[in-house]
Image (cartoon, rainbow, N blue to C red; front, side, top):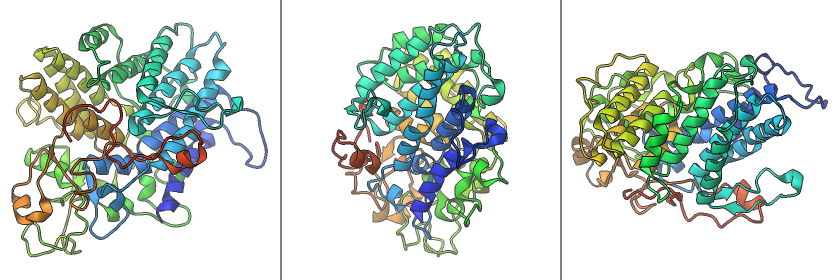
Length: 508
């Protein structure tokens, strides 16, 4: 059953790339037609990226590994994720390598010598964005020799993440030198900014900030340099996203990618979110006990189970019903995941939190507070809920040490990413180590664990407690499609606890 939906995830991504009413192309599947133009390939590339960011592997995998969601007691689909088994995220890897990156490369090749630099600029910015995702998730990967089959390079060597980051920084600096004043792109084929190249320039600047700040715990990071950059750069003030109005829940191939695993489609139906997923106690209790208004937008119900506890046959909360009983009412994902959600590549809250972090590291409390509050408010606005937590609630800013302020930012970033940027939440938690991890042994005394749950911390999976020596996942395994088809592939990782190069901060 799982393989069916892994294939389905790739199908959805490819289906978006061929929808005539969006991309203005209707190819006969049995006939070779003309090579697509840049304005046709651009939306295919944009949707190819977006469909993976919140698709099968990154959508569910990210949600499980940052403890937004957990496996239902009555299903088995996500046991691998919830017990830290050797998950590969192979469909996401193959899809990103096979669809958006080649599309973006083709756009750059077709427009490299054009006086109109618009398509080249956007394609290069999105290509850098996608490569960052790939190396952030898997670490060392083929990069310098990748996508060069036309040069007879069929087995690209694996490059270090440090080298990849160095080249991505060179590329973003180079693309930012392009003069876009006389350039344009078709606004009808740009789903993210409607052809506004000034916003794409802001996107590239903000992407540079993201590249810089991801290295915050490495020797490559210099906060003074990053501070100087944000104070002179033209950065995004809004989300770069596929708007929710693009999705059509009545047509299977045009749904938000997470909805494809909930609503009926060709050949049958799916209900993974409603039957296989429950809210996770880690996030649920944090929102509930702090009266966060986003709770009702994210979950339906009054209590949530421990993470990775699908094997429990005991009564943790003492209500006389065993945890795995169908009579027990655990919180679920609200609305089985809304059909019309925006899908950000980079979100307004994310950007503000990055800037707040830079100011916090510089001990500029006033500016850190300003951008932190802007980040929280952007998240609240995305959910269309009232601001009841920033001025007087639990999210009120408190001047403190650098680490205390980084924790405030990291905790609110964790909350804000839920439903929108699951893989980004996973990556940022690995970088910042917020939320922190509590080593409470839930299975040893469930009554105690329920009454004394470490609200605001993550916990070690109940069923995967010994798998990673009481650590959390840090990166997926290398996909089999990479290892078995590339003679220059490295050996397989020992487990999903192997950290990528920039993941250096102390903590689980």
